[in-house]
Length: 296
Image (cartoon, rainbow, N blue to C red; front, side, top):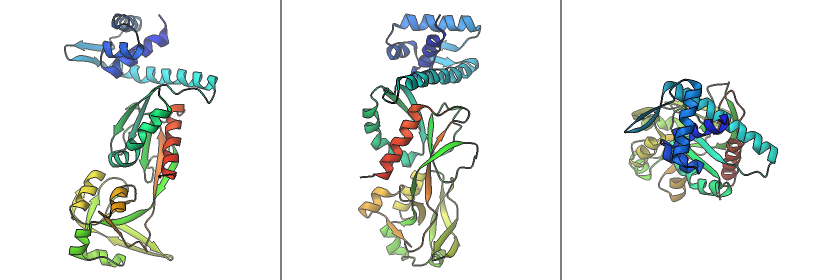
């Protein structure tokens, strides 16, 4: 039995959720995939998959084996890619994680171009505003914004966006337009409770710092909630230009206090700790970096 081929068959079965799906991915017959996985289980002496009328589910041993087998396959692909040179075609599956709103506005609309450039590459996109465990979730590359809390992460800065205070025109008409940070004391804030959010807003101008402790009746844990709360006129929000780019261009939201600056937001390409970033992950990071630096 070809060990690497058997590992790939098992990984494809888990990815597809069925032997027939894996057979289509591998372009072989379903009986061949079933037989290969059965032989693999026999050689290892453990059950890797639980078979039921509802489908296939990896056992605890199967989940552990899946992660290691997937990495081994990727490293084998990397070795082939390096041997063939920079012109080699990227193949296989790239698993990406990024925040929901940033992905919806700035990544997914650009994904067709990336896939057109790499026609033999498939993409899994995990949308999550939280910092999930990249190794545990099998992520090849994550796009994260703000300060990285974990200094052990393998990361590269690929973009930066200014931050502003945003509000709907209806809210500003009703409550008035703040002209200096101190005016914010009589306003409601939409409080974002993820990283980079909070109630303390610090502004800078001409060497002067002005910090304001904001009050807000509405607190949300996802950027989509911040956007909808601002559109509904529930208050002001501090956010990157990325978060409100379409509405800022159309006039559906307004940026205020623009003669004061807020700390910008950095965008990082983050790779799993403990192994070298794959060529696929590096290619995607470079693609997003180029796209954001040339938004037109």
